[in-house]
Image 1 (tube, rainbow, N blue to C red):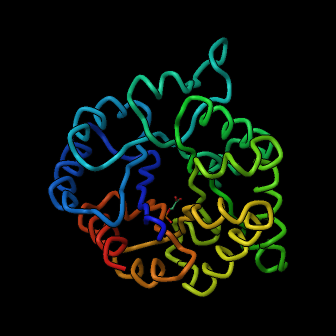
Image 2 (cartoon, helix red, strand yellow; image 1 turned 180 degrees about the vertical axis):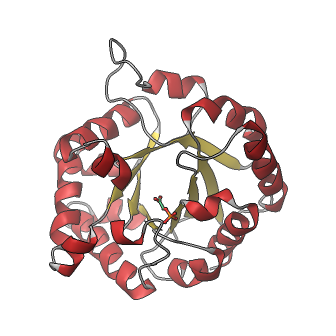
Length: 252
Ligand code: PGA
């Protein structure tokens, strides 16, 4: 049985006092989780705070991006060793907003995936199609292309030490969730594609769904056979919603 993982992606939200209130509200309510894990991926400046507040809890923390370079003249970038300084466990790699707004192509995403793993961080590797691609019936081709870029440089065994997140771009922040059946179909495709390279890696791989997950729809999504939790944007900023989603992962 794969463990379910719910990770919050705060995106560019929060401040010191709101974060403190949010984290302090969720910690006691999630203290008894034993069949699901949960994590928050916070903006870089708040990693120090996340570490300080979460270090004695069962909630992990991580970042939303990283540089593929180890160090050097890369103004504004943040390296893996900096993330290690704050004991990050996870880092999101290849989120669709990074791909669409900051020009991260498949090769860059693959380089970031490799850099994260080299530093012992667990990448949460995001894939997903746009509405246009879904309507053009090329969802599987797009997801396969995104996965192949990482498989080509990292190899299938590396996926065993990662988390995959299927996030249809049309469902992110739009309130339009993929139906459990739509999501399950793509998750099964992803797992099947990995199984053709390694049945063992495929069986153990945690594949999260992301895109307008809320307390009200989480249990239905997470009860699908290939959906192993979620990557949560908007709803991770509300303690009640995030706790409800994590509890759904614990119960299914
Ligand atoms: P959403 O975002 O839950 O607000 O749709 C998900 C994500 O972008 O990770």
